Every structure is written in C-alpha cells, then in structure tokens.
Image (tube, rainbow, N blue to C red; front, side, top):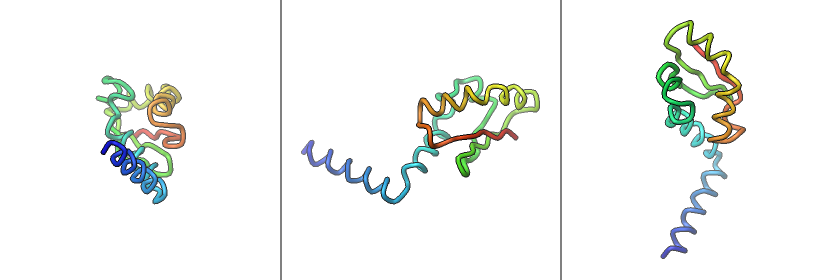
Length: 95
C-alpha cells in the first residue's frame, strides 16, 4: 500500500512538472506563505498580490514602508529563494 501511494505521489509530481504547473504551484506557495517567509512585520505591511514574469507585486501600507522595503529587496529575494527556490521570483515591485 505504501509503495502504491509513493508511486501515485511520484506520478502526480511528474505530471505536474510535465504540464508546467510546478512553477505555478511554487508561486502560489510564495503568496500563501508570505508572512512565514518574510516574518510577521513585513507580512503585515506588504501584501503579495500576484507574480507575473517572475516579478512579485506587493501592495504596501504607505510610501515610507515602500522606501524601506526597497532597501530590503535583496534580503527579501534571498528569503524567498531559500524557502521556495531560485527560479520563482527574480524581482519585487512595491505599490
């Protein structure tokens, strides 16, 4: 039974990858787990809206935070890369 479940799981992973859904699933993971990736403070002030062409668009509470997060951009990208993988998000846009 356990072998059947592993085989089914592996088959689903292969199908998802073959259909090109793997990156979409990882994108949704970034959005869904945003606060745990960047921490509660940034998670409260910057809300992920979408990922398009490897750019994560974030709605920010105000202009001061937008400026602050611009300075932290590389750190945030590294946190995403460490948690989700390198090829998912290559840039951040704050608005």
